[in-house]
Length: 109
Length: 112
Image (cartoon, rainbow over all chains, first blue to last red):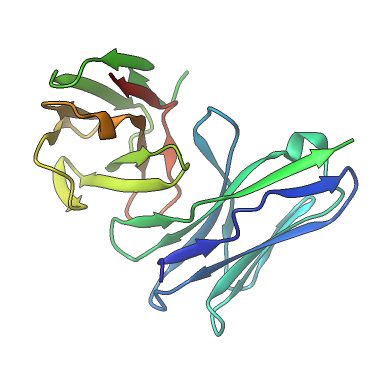
């Protein structure tokens, strides 16, 4: 089993739709969790950190479920510009962060 | 002002050659990383350094040798390049382990 697993997609959604991604992790001792966004032929960039209490940033909401060992990302009112690959990442408490393979999102007009 | 920069951006070379990629960060971070992203887009950690010290070497072949002359720089030298080394190599930095990482623009390596 991979340490961090994501559905690769692609998710094809119309503008304005709500879309949710999950990411499961196997290391229960993990301390930090993140969602990164990667555009085609670009570097990953932090979208948001994921806290135990969950966090929201505009149209984006991230949740952490330690009991079931997954994190989620909810995007409301999707925009064309949200089309990208979304990578979940797990900090293992040391100097190693493990990335998922990414979920591709296409938002269409 | 670029936070994490890498050179070169593109690298096309023949099998068997030796090449280097340079990385610099101006964020004052203590920790730097090298990642390899293959054609399937899987981002895999290769090395991490903290305060110029090697912390993680993720079973990378000996042909890959990182070097950190100071906290702001982490270079990657690759000997005897192979076809399978073709990938995008990203440098990244963070304040410390497990914290938000800032990535460079990537170096696209193609080995012919």
